[in-house]
Amino acid sequence: MLTVLFADRIENWPAYEPALTTALAEAGIDAKLVLPPADPATVDYIVYSPRGPVQDFTAYTRAKAVLNLWAGVERVVGNPTLTQPLCRMVDEGLERGMVEWVTGHALRAHLNIDFFLSHQDGVWRQEGNVPPLARDRSVVVLGLGALGGACAQTLAGLGFQVTGWSRTQKTLPGVTCLSGAEGLRAALSRAEILVTVLPNTPETTDLLNTETLALLPKGAVILNPGRGNLIDDDALLAALDAGQIGHATLDVFRVEPLPPEHPYWAHPKVTVTPHIAAETRPASAARVIAENIRRFEAGEVPLHLVDRSRGY
Image (cartoon, rainbow, N blue to C red):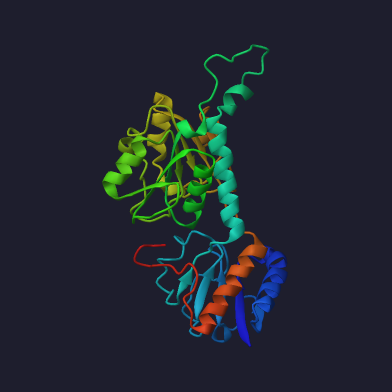
């Protein structure tokens, strides 16, 4: 029998315990779930959260893998005590949540819904306010992994002109895929709506800065459900004040929760959502965990194995 350590916050245990029990049984895995402080020498797999109680993996010499419950691994990938394989979380529920958040806010920007919500004053303002069709709107998605790729293809399915950019060249049906430094500049120059779904790595820190924000078409809209470090906050605020950026809808931040005094809260061209775009859901996440344990036990390639040299 395998021993699986649940190393997330204890308040999440009531939701995850039945989900993991069911998923492991359905995958044909004979396992028992334990909580810290279980004997590290008995643990075969660690279901991990960066907010959980386990941050030092030194004693877990028997553990075959650390299975992250979050899509982001920036809080653990550089941990010097982590010698086990690390898998990030990409599950159907998380992916659909991201797609729905991005699609909703892209359509909100495309249809200029905020304008009409703020002008419910009895004045008929049809002239100049009819939106273009989606096929006449250019949307750019930075990051074409599982989440970004799903967003790009959904937006393309709605008829938008979708360009995707990634560090390595990708191919997606209905999406113009670019890569590299010149590809990034070309992508930004056409981004009427820009969606950022990149991971947190040294290469992506402050990717949107004074120089790159200036490449966007004037009045562009930014949607960031990816990582807070992607944006230079001061540069974005300056670009919003200057009218270079028309609006920013932000779901992730360098410091979370976003401090009450942060200027994003009061800025008229910023919408803050509280990191809700892609939340891990116990039932679907448990199935990914169980499948990865099955794969490790069978000697198969695991899902979403982290490349430590790239940081994701």
